[in-house]
Length: 182
Image (cartoon, rainbow, N blue to C red; front, side, top):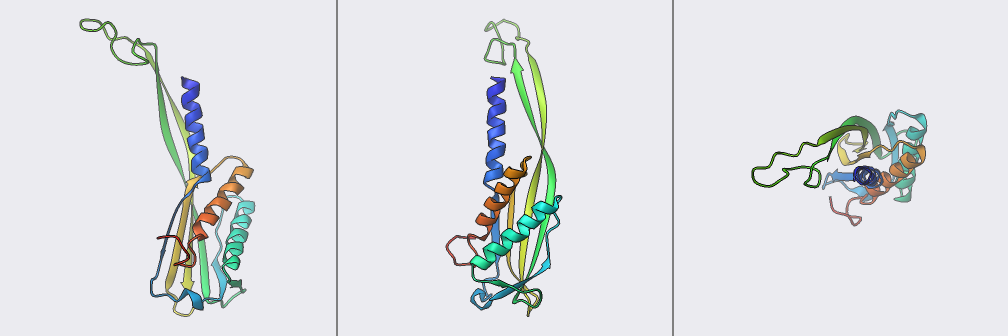
């Protein structure tokens, strides 16, 4: 039973890594069709320079696939991206040793409480959030924001897959009106 519970927990954490939570918002008055170029105002600072490079390259690829062209400075859009990480913990408690499937009373009415034992494990994991803001460079007003959050995997291959999945989902609805709801 304990092994099954650990397997369920592990698979749920992997599922979080592969399907990030994504939210987007935008200025409904912005004319996204008029934006043809973008420039990086702030690049994200990741714990690993390799992850940072992959995020920047991934954002570039997705914006270019949407028809935007990167310029060193002076683009129609100023792009700022940030990474936020936080540690979270879960507590898993397993009960063993009683007559009621792991907990409860034994012996019915008048019987004593079955004493079992409980084991609690603390699982610490990292949650990462990528925030991407797009500003109209001429007016300096925010026109679009996207956030992607998920559990940070421990292996580089899974981190790369999580970054790709998050960016795919994040830019699926860019530009606004491209199919997905806010």
